[in-house]
Image (cartoon, rainbow, N blue to C red; front, side):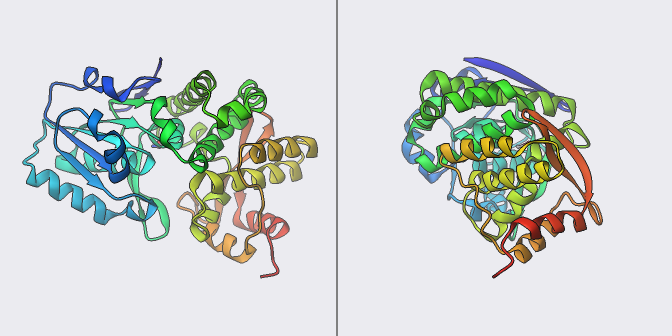
Length: 346
Ligand code: GLY
């Protein structure tokens, strides 16, 4: 097991990679416990949950809404929870995002932690302190910054994930390598088959290196005014794709990273061989790199990005393999690029 820390504005968040759900009791404070989970996780792992009332929600991005938040808040009131309660989210990114948001607004904030059960949430969604929900098709439009007291990344729980979900999580691991760690990139290239088969030592290495990179970045810039923007590599176009095609976050980000790699090459920062290397790695991990979408729809969705600032946005390029570079660019420049690589024949 490896433990990493994020020192947030309101307290420390300890991330335990390789710890087990069965041991969560050792991390729980002596406070009344409420568990938030989803139906799948409850069915598969409910027998190993610590003792306490369980609030179960459905699955899928469509339930990450204010309506679900209201449902949970009402249940908390029904359970007569007060400020001394501790809320434990056990699940993937959706459960963790909703749990963190609910815990941050219920009675103006109660303590919370996560047992993170999917690869995507272990390397991304459960750490960093952003907790939010969607507003219609717009991802994470409503939310807060608030660090969980702890995150347990139980690698054994990954074994019940479908293969597509493993690939989705690997997309965010590749992102961390591309923006910050050329050695990790070479390690993934060398161990792709083993990663896809969840070889325990390889997965421990990938998850803990990824958590270390994200923790380091968030520690420097919790509220995303500078360095943290690098974590959005592949996400400007990735989120636009996700809005028009619910193909899964990792798969959309994979296409977004493919586009960002080409954009970085057009800027002269990386070579066509390096773009080929990125495409080959993503494809080897079962991830898509095609950009077969209507350029007009991508431009429209990108233009509504919540991170835009007037006619500009901060776009994340690669300056080199393992090194990101954030540039403020105009929407005109982004749209010009989108028109040059996406389909305009729809
Ligand atoms: N909770 C995800 C993040 O903070 O990036």
